[in-house]
Length: 482
Image (cartoon, rainbow, N blue to C red):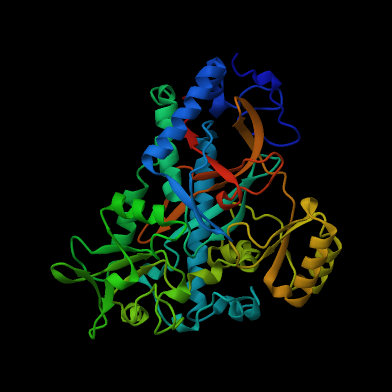
């Protein structure tokens, strides 16, 4: 038997591949027809091929549990998600607009704070953010750009329109899995790459390298670029090692670097000290430099902030960029775009209620069973309340948390997240998903062709994070036939 798409039910959601009448959407036509031609045995064979490829390539991620850290093989579904190139072109423009405005916002906050003086955003929203770094006031990174790498989470609602769910501007992760997903899919469905115009994603490391090189304080042909990792026990260590290898950059830990009396950063090598120009850091602000932030940090480099402020080394992302990686600030991004760019936002936000506002807080408290409540600065899907799937006890606990610290919480409607066919056994069933494209900004702006698609593997679940049982798919941006 093969897949019978007439048996596939999209339910009351927008499905990325299959329309309400069970016909394939245009970008997915060839994919859907091809999958429908495969027997159950052939589909199972492709699934097994994907699993063995993941093992062979060593694609893994780490889950933190009470019992300890567990390394797991990357959870992957072989049915790709498809998006038309024309739709993606508009989305990419919106992502570039958003990051450009956010970087202007961050730069303003650490200098004149004109946006606060003009009453666009309240001072307490920004200055009380746990990610606002007074140590960064007065500093101007290369090109005035603080967030050089951004992972923006997008979702599609019932109308098929992309909405921005959140911006990840501190240490965004996941891009290596986007690239590996493509490599796995090329092995599993090679026939479809021979004819379809599926746009590539493997150029990301080259664009990342060029962007980092554009930040170098020294005008030299080959600046020394390093990737700073917390080490092998970090959940994203696979990605740190992957990107360093792909860029031809050194992978270092804090103990491999030293700041000398000239306020320059040097890497310890067997040939002696070698000056470092750019550090792609995968360590949170508070662990970067024990002289400036946490004194007990064993992950950072003493004196690193001194070297950065002196302009002798570039840090990507710059310390302090996380002030805009705040779900309360997120609510103001449309106004931020209008303020700095005098443009209307090309990508809409999800409707957001600020618990710091008394009227909005009252609405949230009265509708906890219908809303999704999020803390301002958590990531990975932790610390959330998904109202429709919560208990009365959980709702009461969140009501207490919100009342104690209203600044720390926002709420959003429970979206009808789009779905895509996902293999459950040998049968495709709809599962909810999101998308994390990556945007680079240095001298120029660049957006990945698609991004990392994360999918909730449990029926009805809206939680797509791998650490909480989610999986992933390859994302195809498909050029339409001319």
